[in-house]
Image (cartoon, rainbow, N blue to C red):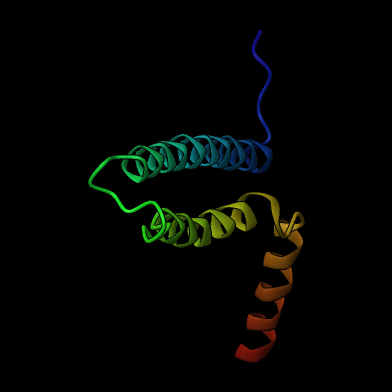
Length: 95
């Protein structure tokens, strides 16, 4: 016998799992970018004193999206109540 799921909690769990995958991808890809940066830094054709740490920019841009994803998954824990409040406001405004 299968128990029924709470749809609200199931959606929240899916959002949180998606955020964790997103964070894992962020860490792996950005670690790779820093490895590439380090390898090019110590090449004979690279000037060790003047190579700009360019991986900072992808980390910053992607990091903004990651923060947004985090807030979507973990922020505003009482989404149902917020929705009910907004719905009630719309009903009142309609009258």
